[in-house]
Image 1 (cartoon, helix red, strand yellow):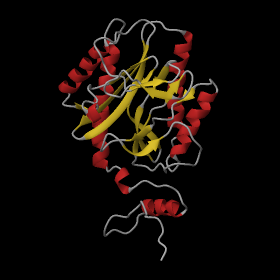
Image 2: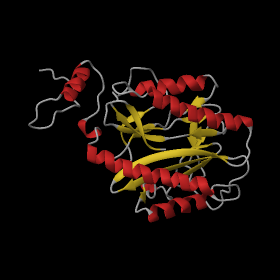
Image 3: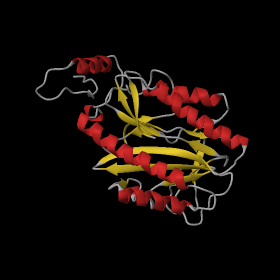
Amino acid sequence: MAFGKKKRWRCRSGEQPTEFDRKIMYLENKGKLVPTRELIKTPEQIEGIRRAGVVNTGVLDEVAKHIRAGMSTLEIDEICMDYCKRHNATPACLGYEGFPKSVCTSINEVVCHGIPKETDILEEGDIINVDFTTIVDGYFADAARMFIIGKTTPEKEQLVRVARECLELGIEAARPWGYVGDIGNAIENHCKRYRYGVVRDLCGHGVGNAFHEEPDVAHYGKKGTGMLLVPGMVFTIEPMINMGTWKVFIDGDDPYGWEVISEDELPSAQWEHTLLMTEDGPEIISY
């Protein structure tokens, strides 16, 4: 006897299918990749994620007030830790798979997962990505911002701007009942205009009840592919845009094995928001 592949979508036990259920089951029967029910957040979960988002945005606002040339990335970590303590929040990165600090601080050619250090001193002209994830009452929110330290080169300014535009275009492409591939396609097409590389080894992700959930949100791809974007899903878009090649490597001098660097060691930039998909489109939860 031949069996079909296991269905991802299940109606709630003892309940008749709703119009929402029927729409998802119809698309799944057409061969579309649909989320599991667990990825559709309840109203209570959404409110919890929103509370985490408020604190997460507040952390990055606090960093923005103080970041400057001459400070160490370890000081940025201390700012984040202090803000969390004052707001009864926990930094998700601290101790995650051995990550030793509360925040990722990635300077210039470091694409992501830069580890704060007392010896990493910000200099005039640097660009830095500060990426933070907050846990509040068991709920997660995740965001990252780029900061330009003082005055930098026109090339770095353009990179930071285009990376921001990639995030905005990705959000614009994310529509209810559309597909994850629509997001990556919009981002990749924009980058091609500047001959920048879209990092392929890392991606956005579902978030909210855990640090990382389905779906993977690639920042390149084809329209109409990937998982269906259903109202109630919470996920990040976080394109990592390299000035040169999209290829990356892990810093061999990093004892923790976390820091990712562009292969040609040209600068990289990244912005990230946490988003809730609604019937009207994405709602920004943290930025």
